[in-house]
Image (tube, rainbow, N blue to C red; front, side, top):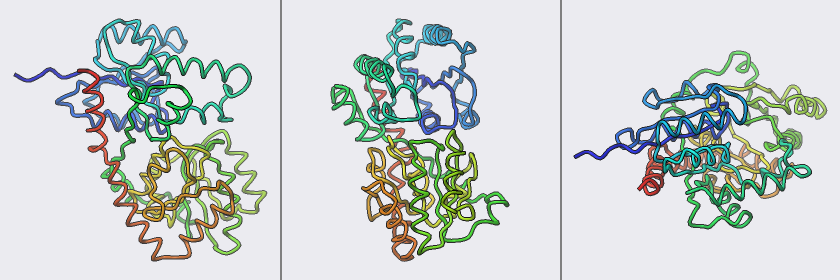
Length: 377
């Protein structure tokens, strides 16, 4: 007799272009459909990753944009579909309380992609100021204590939950984000946009991510200023965000307008990354760093500032370089070391391609299936 499939539902605000949303789609797609009846619930049916969701995954979306309306719609959906496990990516408190109110016995899992201590200090968000921060922290602490399981994307995220928010170690499991190696390899073969191809002169550094304070593009730009005193490198930045004008102003102030190209959001960043000599990530913090794994899968050595997430991905001197000091001179030195030593750069590129295999979708999916299966049982 064949056992019935367990029902799992991933809940997100939308499929807007962020690391959490991409990871949610990749994880849900990779779960064994013979074991799991998969669904996804969005508060709003929008975002560039809608087309990436497998047709075998049932997609549902709310229509009410009010907080109360979203909560009521999710509670109603859970009551009607009766999932065994609900995995929340963002909007944790809304998902937790709506599922508990539905009273169908569903287990609640939080997927945490970010070290919350760093998140609460992030200048991109208003809750770091005044009374908002302690209130948000108190709500987060209560929510973490009430979840059945928290899946942290890196050991640093898990350690932060335990040390700062008092979460029991047994309630946290570290499971990294996946990368679809075949999809990255195929997408990397596409040509880059002709306008950018005309400007593509080696040595080339590529960076990718939201144009926001957390990504610390000023650090990378200041490092490039130092680097170009000795190496005529160009920098291509993939992404969009609120800090675009400030970044453009800094590029002009550093007299780098001919050396830095802002390419905007790219649905296929890998065609750029694969043609780079080095991929750089200078974030203040990362819960994981999906783009690092994707760059490594392209066979490109990486330079990354050390943080909770990057330390779980990059093996210093094997598939990339980790920079301990988040300072322009240190980043510039790491970039120059790679760009000035072709055999070393090739060695790290080969190591990067092999290292990315640790995060292949089938391997990560099995870890999720084990964690969710134990919880549902």
